[in-house]
Length: 233
Image (cartoon, rainbow, N blue to C red; front, side, top):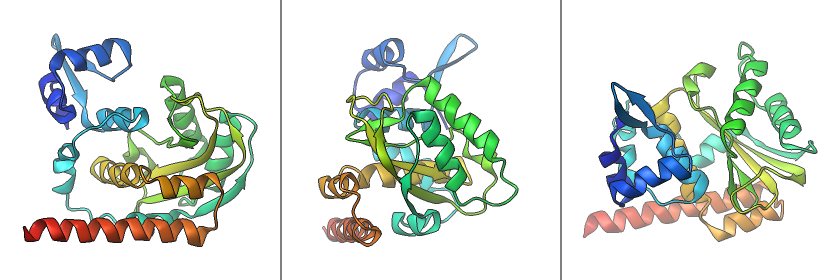
C-alpha cells in the first residue's frame, strides 16, 4: 500500500509540511519514482510506532480487508513464546541470541534473518522507549512462515539499543508474519498493548509468563467490551 505525502499527512492528522519535515529531519522513509514521492504504509506505521508518534488506525483499513485471520496477541505470544535470560552484552549479540531461540520452521534461513535484522538496526534503532524494542523484518514474506507469531525475549542484562529515550532495553518483541497486511495488524495490536503502563511495569520487573499473558488478556477483554459499547450507541 503506497501513500502520497497528502495521504500520509491525513493518517497522522498533520499538515503536509510536517510530513516533509519528518522526511527531511527525522528519517521518515520515502521513495521516489518518476519525480514523485511516495511512502510505504508498513514503513510509515513502523516509523510512527518506534517514535511514539500517533497515527490513525485507519491506516490498517487495507489490512483489515485481507482474508487472513490474525490470532489475538495472546495467541500470537503462545505461538512464539516468552523467552527468559536472553544473553548478549550488546545489540548484535542479543539479536543473535534471539534468532537462535526463535521457534521457526526448519527451512527458514536463520543467518539470513539475522542479517536482515542487523541491517534494519543500521537504518535506525528499533528501541521504542521505556526499555522495549521491536526489531522486525520490513518484508515479512521473505520468511515464508505459515502462521504468524510474536515472541517476547526478556534479556538477562539491559542492553543499549540506542533507543529514542536513551534507556537500555530489557524486553524485545519479535514479530514474524506471513504477509504485509498481517504484519501491519500485528504491529497495531502490539503497539496498542505496549501503551499500557501496567504491562510495561510487568516487563520491567521480568514478571512471570502467567502475569504477562494475564495482563494482555485483560487488555484484550477491556478493548472488546469498549468496542461493543461503542457499537451499541
